[in-house]
Amino acid sequence: MGASLNTGGSGKAGRRSRARRHAPMSEINVTPFVDVMLVLLIIFMVAAPLLTVGVPLELPQAKGKQLEANKEPIVVSVNARGEVYLGQEERTAMRLDEIGARLTAIAGNRGGFEEPVFVRGDKAVSYGDIARVMGRIRDAGFRKISLVTEVEGGG
Image 1 (cartoon, one colour):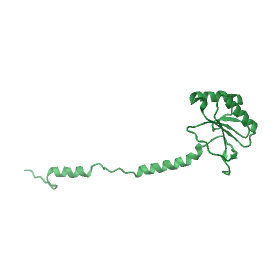
Image 2 (cartoon, rainbow, N blue to C red):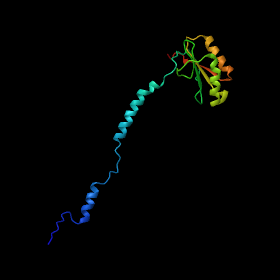
Image 3 (spheres, rainbow, N blue to C red):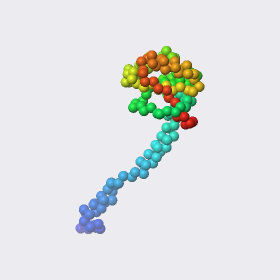
Image 4 (cartoon, helix red, strand yellow):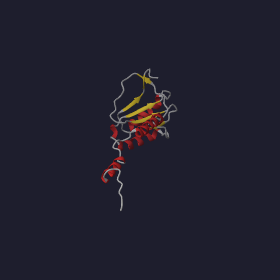
C-alpha cells in the first residue's frame, strides 16, 4: 500500500511553474554598456589632444579666405631653424635636395602632380628659406603650392 502526496495539483502544473520561474529574461540590461561607453568617452577625450603632435611652428598671421581642400593635401613644414619636414609630424629633417624626390614619390602614389602642396613656415624663418623650399617643390613638378598662415588676430 502506498500513498501519494501531491500538494501542487497535477504533476504537469508543478513542472510548468518551476520552468516559468527559471525562464531567461527577455530584457537587455544596458547599464554595463553605458558604463563602458562613458569610460571610453573619457579615455578618448583625454587622449585626443595628445594625438595632435606636429612640427612646432608659430605661423604668421594674415587676412584671407580659407582654402577648401577636397582631400588631405601634402604638407611641407619649415621650422624656425630652417629645417624642412615632410608632413606635420617632426621626425627627421630632410635636405633641400631631397624634397623633389620625396614629393615625386608621393605624387606617384596619390593623384600625380596636381596634388595641392601646403607650405607651413614659421614666422621666424627667412623669406629666402621659404622661397628656396617652394622653388624645389615647383621644380619637382607641382603647380598647386599654397602658404599656410593663421587668421589675423587669432593668436
